[in-house]
Length: 183
Image (cartoon, rainbow, N blue to C red; front, side):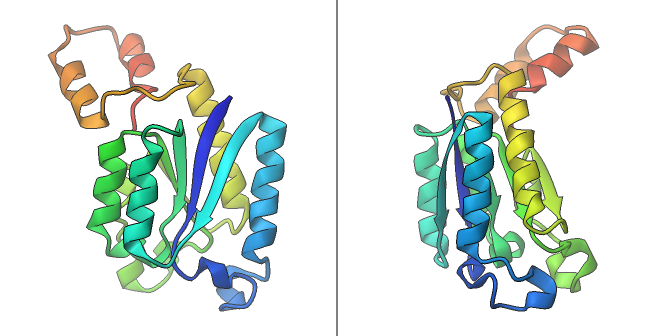
């Protein structure tokens, strides 16, 4: 069974009451229930966590390396400021999908830059709570297609270096090989 860690960043504990015109009226508990329901349908085990503390988020990401097959993260405001979270995601080498309830690219200029996007498998922004469900489906499909029930023990940068050192292959083999990477 696939195991996915879902990480909610700062202020997401205030969902349902915080800036409803931007983030909607759904509470974090209701969002987590929707994620859990879809996970059961997909046969995926999820662990959901939320923190306002950057260090705690980094610790959870690091611990995920030996416990999970992938990560879904809404780093919230840390998206635009946290090299530590970016580096933790890169270090663990797990396929990661970045999610944002609002479209960060249509908001204030300082929100347009994501430190996480460069190390994530993908980014979903602006679709509200549905974004989390799409991230779960997408990560499930990615992990299933790559046959990655258990994560690779070699961190992503080492896998990339090893891949670069291998002899050339046809384009179709390269595409298939890259399906298991975090890029």
